[in-house]
Length: 174
Image 1: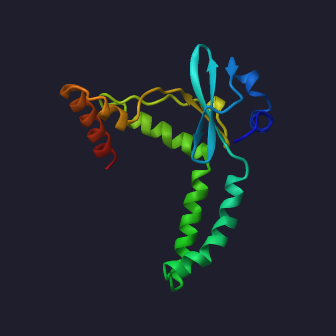
Image 2: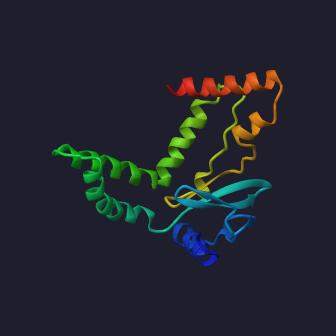
């Protein structure tokens, strides 16, 4: 995990300010992990926010990590031919794209806007003014995992509503 000084440095590098200057409250200790970063809890104007901060060096390490894995993968999966370079390049491009928080912010906002008409779904609001290429800020969302929901033995009407919302969301994406 990122130490508190590194969190502060990331904010300084991205906004020229500390998170304490940006938010009304900010927890410098992470409260959750994300795939390539960690999540911090913040408050701004009475709103509870999730602030996702990317681990430093993630984007830079992708190419070198793939260069190390490539010979092993070629042997392990018997990848032969000139097209293997093209496939590895596509994997590299997609992994690097995952580190682009500006793109993630844009795509997340597009999903939220596009799915407004689907009943029984709630998405976080995103805050571009508190986001950068290494930090994304969104509403803090609380809930339970789907497996916890099903284990709680909900009544049939609630189960139907959740199932329909999941189906509608899936089909809308198709």
